[in-house]
Structure formats: C-alpha cells, structure tokens
Amino acid sequence: MAGGDELKLLGMWASPFVLRVKLALSLKGLDYEYVEENLGNKSELLLKSNPVHNKVPVLLHNGKPVCESSVIVQYIDEAFAGTGPSILPADPYERAVARFWAAFIDDKLLVAWNQSSRGKTEEERAEAKKQSVVAVENLEGALRECGKGKPFFGGDSVGYVDVMLGGLLGWVLATEELQGVKPFDPACTPLLAAWAESFGALDAVQPVMPDVSKLVEFGKMLQARQAAAAAGAGGN
Figure 1 (cartoon, one colour):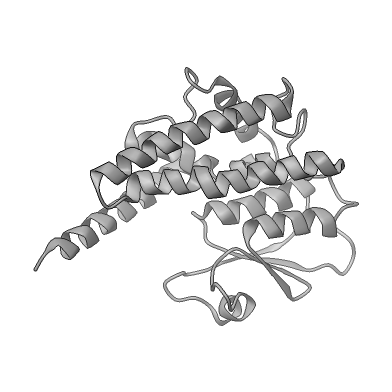
Figure 2: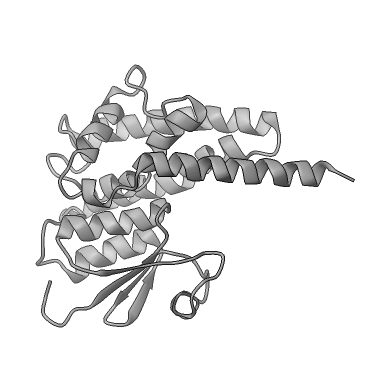
C-alpha cells in the first residue's frame, strides 16, 4: 500500500457484503483496520459515514467513506491499481460483462435465495426456490462463458464476479447444513461446485472466510427469531 494510505473497514462478521470487501483487500494485499459493528447499537462513526443507509460495509480511505460492497470493491481496484492483481478486467467489454453478472448475483440470485427461506407463505418460498434454481443455472452458464474452461470467472485468476459471488460462499456452505440442500450441486452445476472448491482454497481467501459452523449457529438463531416473529404476527 502506498505510504500514507489509511484504510479502515466497518463491518459485521457474518455479512456476505462485508466479506466481499475483505476478499478484495486480501487479494490486493492491503493492510487495514477492521472495526466490528454491533448492528443493534450502531456506532456514531457508522451512522456518520453512511447516513443514507446506516449499513455495513463502509470503507474509510484516509477518513473518506465509501459505501456499498460492489462500489467498494471497484473503488479498491481503481484506487490501488498499482498494488496486487487487478480485480476488474482491463477490456471495457469484459468489464461490462463482469458488472452485469455481479448485478445479476444481487438482483436475482440473492433475492431468490432470501425469499426461499423468508417468504411469508409456502407458495412464495416454493416459487423462490424455483427462481433460485434458474438463477444458479444461469450463473453456471456465465462461468462457462466467462471462464472459458478456466477455474474462475476471471479465467486463470480471480476477477470481479468471483469476489462478488465469493462473498456468499460461507453462507452457501452453511445453507447445506441449515436446509439440507446444496446450492451448487455437483450433479447439476459442476462448474460452480468446482469453482467453490478452488476459490475457497486460495491463500488470499482462507484467512478472511468466516467459520461455517458459526454461520450455521447464527443462521439457526435467525430462523428461530423469524419463526417467533411469524408466530407473534399470527396471534390475536
């Protein structure tokens, strides 16, 4: 990192969006201070740094806040272009394609995954599960197209889509235990299943990945809280 650059990340350990930023910083080899936020009692620094959404992650670069995981990852790549590997492709078209699939992950895949467990009715959850399958199949096709037979969306090396999807990997693994389903099933999406193995084994990834067993416990707590809220809403 260039002399004089100070990086501070405001986050929450289980957040897949925070993990994206940690992955980008780790891949770039950048040093930073990490501040764990209590989202039930948000710090003045967080509220001041992200007054619009009051959410993590927030990256402070020499005191200047950058918000939203996709924006932060791109900012890190541009602000530290001379440090570590590039995350976004150099070619404008390939960069546009990478941004398209990154947006697809958040707008389609993540929305469907969330709705499949949080939908208010059985019908809503069933429909969301169908949408999840379609979204994952589309992503399998994207990996085939973008990776061109190589292990990552970025080809031989990790790229922007890898980082954006990689942020979800801890919860993908936790979901297998929580719901008994494999979001990236080797039988249906062999490329994504292989991608998850290859990505999770990277030296830059392992130190920042959350403990899956802790995510499972956290997920069970969220499920219990959701069930209690639903039971309360159903009462007179």
